[in-house]
Length: 251
Image 1 (cartoon, rainbow, N blue to C red):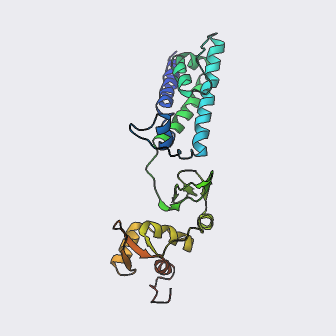
Image 2 (image 1 turned 120 degrees about the vertical axis):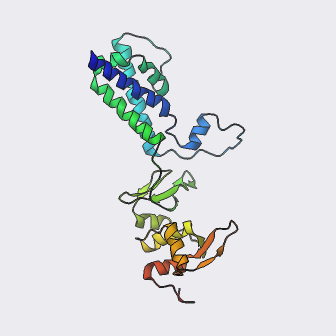
Image 3 (image 1 turned 180 degrees about the vertical axis):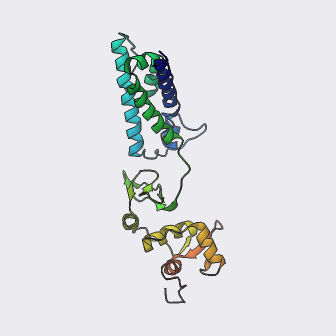
């Protein structure tokens, strides 16, 4: 009895996590639209694309909930006309009331399945702070427009677009971003992307660029209208490759 009671509590806790985080697992723009938007907002912009792995996690969760709801309805000979297979929150709320019965009927299997979905949804809704270095904006077409999500390089992982989920090695991202020709003078953030694509190996940081400039190894080239420091990306890239600042006319 104690084991079934403990499993029932575990199942119920997982279902509460699903209820709390199922909607929160979507990107912010999609959440705002599903929730009616922000008060006073009149934006008609399309929501950002939902990464495939987010759709997969939500679909698997909904499938598990529907499957266990059918078990409850069938074996307990219940009728619940308002339940729908695609309504994850409604299914989860229904199963909360049958958690102890499920524990006694299916034991660890249901606890493991719903626990997996709860952990996956929590990870999507409450992700760890981003790490690594921003490489640039994603040029992959979504419908007819570029994704424009942040492409981030994290040590030991494929370089990933944080919006559409596309992954690839640095040389592949270099090829797909090649058409975006930068102006001669760029910000530090843009410089990081350009140097990474040009060298294929070096991923600079904002602090490294500041230190180079402070020590006179590279030269600043003024500021833009927003007050951001600009750099000549051709010369800085040459320095990153050779360790020498190019003389006038050599770059």
